[in-house]
Amino acid sequence: MKKSILLLFAILLTGMAYSQDKKVTKYIRKNASSPEAKADLDAMNVAFKKMREMGCDMGQSWYYQGAVHNIPDVINGPNKLCEKYQTSKDKLWAWGDCTHKSSESASLNFLLWHRMYTWFLEKIVREMSGKDDFALPYWNYGSKEEAENIMPKQMQDKSSSLYESARYSILNNGKPILADQVEQIQLALGELQTNPSFAGAAGFSKKLEGSPHGYMHDLIGGEYANPSESYYNQIYQKEYSGLMANVPSAGFDPIFWLHHSMVDRIWESWDLSSYGQRPTLEELKANPWPYEFIAPNGDHITYTMEEMYAMVFNLDYKYDNLLYGSSETPALAAAKSKVSFQDSNKEVIWEQKVGKIIGENAFVHKVTEKLAKNTNKSFKSEANAKIVLNLDVVVYKEPKDYYTIYLRYPGKQDQYVGVMTFFGVSHDHGTGENHEIAETGVKLNFSYYISDDLLRSDNDFEIIIKKKGIGDAKVTLEKISMAKIK
Image (cartoon, rainbow, N blue to C red; front, side, top):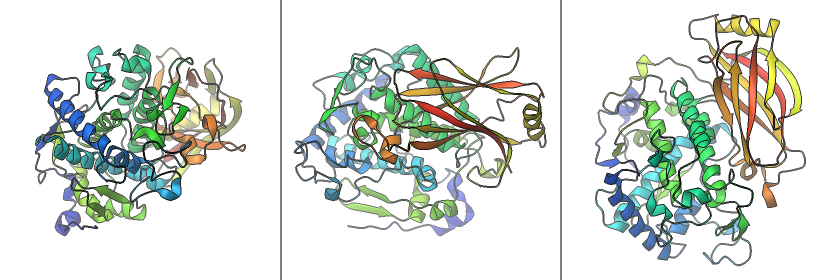
């Protein structure tokens, strides 16, 4: 049953969505590693036990909720978990609505859609568990505290409804995320903090989707694990990578919800900081997405873009603490620089064809003489020049690796720029066994805001790309370029 939400048009017209003065906080999302979160995790366990026992055609069920995110196009053999679903033609209402697609609309709606998705799951758990003050905990991975990089115990317990066997073994065995992996998460969080744009290929939303969001999906799903590890993916119903490593099965692993609560917390932290920006209603209406969810009583809820926009920044929860800012003092939109990285109005500073496979050894691209001087000239041309590094690559199979990017100036410490991750590539571009992609390959662009990494110097510098992981998929760097966003 479709329901509409009455809008307060004055709020939209005056831009008050940027302020949380009207927000009524009823629930606190807590660090899953804290003693205070135990009752919420216990409530999740109670709720998921009931949800797993429900028929897959019931909207509040575990299977239905996972399928709203996505579901495999074909199940291997008779579907033991849901006899009503065998191929994509059998999809039920709102199944497969997630934003993991290579389009401007998907990128722009990624954080907003997932916020609404987790909010509705939170309401269902509240109802199913009977815990009236339940709020979805977040897994604070990337923490300086080792204990917080251990997956919550309730997720490790084989007797729990929150357990999933097809995960990176060290996590299910109660060990912390490895130190070099924690470092990668911390680097990504640090780079996100000073990104001045929400939208665009180099903007906050796209960069967060890559890492730590996509990075953690692949890590939890075993993509960076020892090659000897194998998993039975119960959603695909065959030997495959773990649930979290695949878009069509990710939403079925209960850790998905704690992961996306953390993703939402990262966004909330940045949004309320001095760097935070928001997409406008006009931008979202020009790039619409379906906002369809299940209410705790099973009703179908559909939002227009206007209705969603009136709600998404004024929901009824907050986090026990934030990474970058204070929830009590939200930054005002008027005080933020107005930059839209999705604007195609950009000036190419230079570009060079490369055509080389990034191997096991660090790839080094030298930016010398005229190109280095042109980069610095554009950088110094105005006080807050927005310079973007673009890497155009092609892949022929979804990589199980990730690639870190640095700038290197003579005598200076390498400056971390970002990471290339590949979660969802095969899902978006067509997939077969072993994450195969079409023979022509998939061309991908990775863009990075680097104004806070450049030096005001005409000196030559280097772009360094380092391969990390165990995969054998080849990533070919076709072109490197620098651009200035006007």
